[in-house]
Image 1: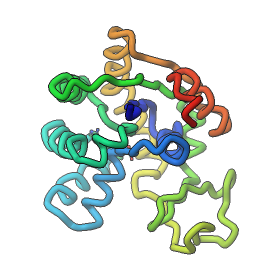
Image 2 (image 1 turned 60 degrees about the horizontal axis):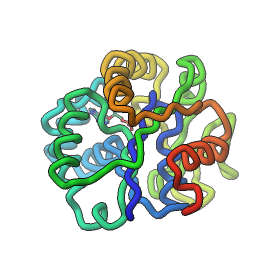
Image 3 (image 1 turned 45 degrees about the vertical axis):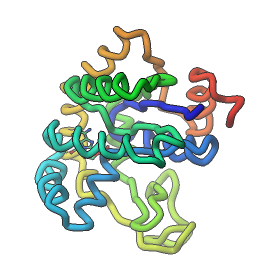
Image 4 (image 1 turned 135 degrees about the vertical axis):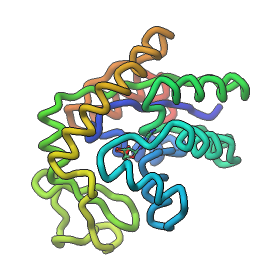
Length: 221
Ligand code: AMP
């Protein structure tokens, strides 16, 4: 039975890291709306151009295009076979409702919705030094996890980059947007009895163990 999970949490809590661990250990397909938007920007598509104007300001991309883009991915054969870990979607109640409709239509049940929790100040500290690999997506931190060779990925040797929206002012705006739009999404899943709250301010391995245990999938890892 494919595993299907939603990861929710503020920027910088480690959703991407957990999604990568879930893929590595359980084979589930990570579906990150942020990663998909960034690849659309890179490929200079119309959607990428539209998304960029919002992303650079730390604002949300409009619901309509975001929902359409994610539903298309959810219907792909790979995702049907491998299951999914949604990271960064849904971010608004409208997106959550659209996702519920899609899952109901396809008669798909979620294993659970994980809310990763962390203080804003820790997020600002974490994101201000974040570096990502342009090729394989590995994440580094200038203080906590520096690469062996400055500016280059340990795994694939490609150049590292700082995300445009990881500047301190933009980080604060993203946190504000999260509290305003995404807190109600957490309440939405909580009201449905699907929510698992997990502290994200710990070593990623510890967080992973809790996530897998709470979801009841640790034996498959
Ligand atoms: P992330 O990589 O998840 O931090 O996303 C980076 C940016 O992409 C966000 O700050 C938003 O501008 C945009 N974005 C990602 N996911 C969504 C979503 N579900 N709805 C609207 N905008 C999104």
